[in-house]
Length: 240
Image (cartoon, rainbow, N blue to C red; front, side, top):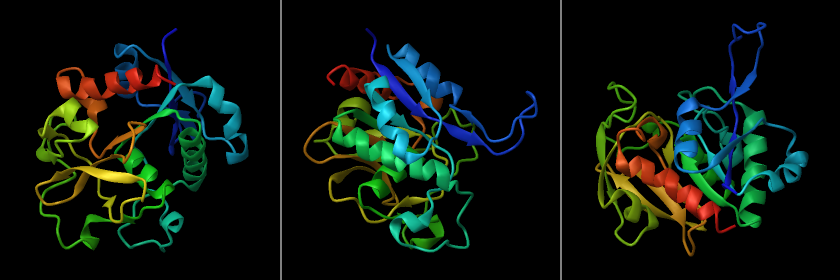
């Protein structure tokens, strides 16, 4: 049996051209294809009431928390910054509970962009709501280049699981304006951009969680390191 990988759904804010549906749940096609090409079976999970999350757990072996809306800052004890982007509290509530129960159940976890940020917040960390809050960043983190092409380099810790996948100096794409501030107690930093922005987090004492700030799903077709990230998730999910 191929391992099943949960993809918590994003929500389309505009009406679709199919029966004029509003707030349609969807998962990005590149992430679906990356999971399939890596030997997994994607299972898309629409946001439900957090009390129903337990009923999802038997449906998957691993989970990939993907990109999307900004994380609501009230989940890390802050009021909205003037540069905060769109948020969707219903999705946050669902994914935070899905994260908590997936960690407890020993599921393999991957975080991508917002997914990294949500994992960090869910485990007790905080975020800069916008790059302008930090006096360090100098690089362009919302690239003007096509999204399937890399735009800046990152430095990866040599003793990390991530380094085994992408090497110690990787070239990645970038489209985000929120960044990690305080790192959750159970996580460690595995990668930073040259301006010191955190680009990778993972579990301190095991390989359950690997999270990246960039979008490997947009580069997996032509970038071996991006493929390695998804193949690693599928491999870790087989151990559950």
